[in-house]
Length: 462
Image (cartoon, rainbow, N blue to C red):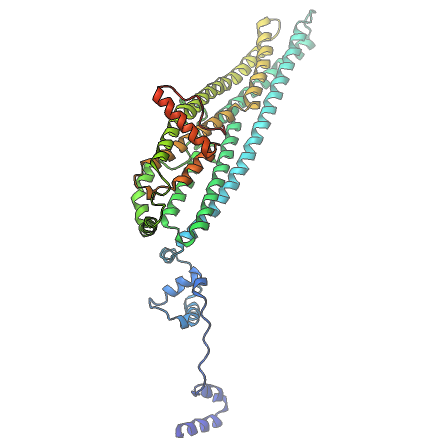
């Protein structure tokens, strides 16, 4: 009471310090309300990062609001820490969401490139044909002037020289443009981008399905697998022309490869198993108490898949490799013939006239006409696109073969994809029903026993 009285007397004698001194007097009463603690499931990763880095000490739940406010007042707003995310239970799911954004961006880029290179094909085709036909027409006029029968006057000589020079320049321009266009093959470039758009959309759906089915149960191994697939697609279908463009005229026809190498998958197999070992053990324990202990696999199904694999290798893959080699040879011949014919026409048009003889006129006119036909057949018929289509189809069958082989190599059936689901996927990829797939496997087995080849292709789609 004495201290209180002295304090009050001091405050009355000095009114300016009244507010400061009164603020120091403790009053008994209800405790100050603390900020409400957010739902733990709704705390963002940024907030969690802040909580983990506050002086290295654990933070009580009822002090969350005060600690965050005090920390931001002293050190500024919290910054996102990737190292803090790495230990978060849903970090793999956050990474997959980021990969979805990246895949969506690639779909848009490849789609834009497809439209651009398809326009290239149409514009170059029209331009080269117009230049070639114009030069051929001018060469024909030059022939008419030079063979008019009368004596060559100075005016007719000047007109003939101008026409010869004009046709030679146009044929030379057509030759240069043909060389460039035949080197890059715009129709094949457009088909590459169409395939990449389709495959990136397929990968996008795969990631979405994984997030919907697994949710927070996705692991880092799932993220690494998707990253490998994205990089493999980037390598198989590059966007740039200079430096990374695919060789349009390889020495040997090879199928397109847009999936990670199996060797890479084998190197990471043990790591993937360790990362999800606990989950798989729980699945194994569950299946041991169920009738699906064999995971949908049986000896008959394995025999059926082996018979189907034989048909794929002996019929579908072999046929598309043969057709691809044929289309590649035709495209090579056309790519060489077009510039060669326009070059011959340019050389012939330069020597047309009384001194050049009839062969110069024949070379100019016939070369120009044939060059227009060859260019129209090559780029109007989009032979390069046909080559890329065969590459993609051959790659499709190669991927299906590797998928079946890798599945059958895995001895532990619990680690395989469900047998009935796998069989259904294979049947749909080949455009067959389950009963038709069984009939095909039966035909393949009987043909192998009799020493003959099955007379039916595995795929009914293409």
